[in-house]
Image (cartoon, rainbow, N blue to C red):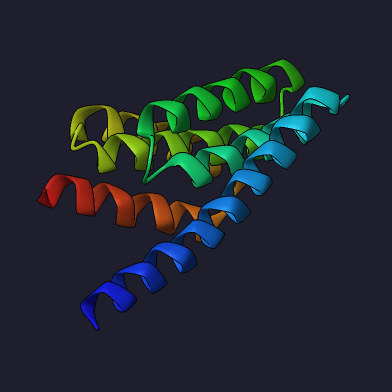
Length: 132
């Protein structure tokens, strides 16, 4: 009976891996073909979220790539989202110094934008990082 349960788990897990791989491949293709910097930022953030738990170094790579595109486009909302995602990845890696630096950067951008909701998320993330 245990053998059947293990086989079932492997089959179900294998299907999910295939879907994730398809999603990743699709986003890589979209990133390659993206013509607007704002589109690149959004795609990079989706890739960052996909890799956040399984491969944090890849997540940081895509978040930083998105950050560069947001800076190039001077898109403040994109900057904010990239800084938060970079902070979250560092948080997952238990690098609280870099996490708080990026949360503060996002907070500063959102103060300029007047986005109170994202400001509150930044404060929440900062509080969690300081507690760790």
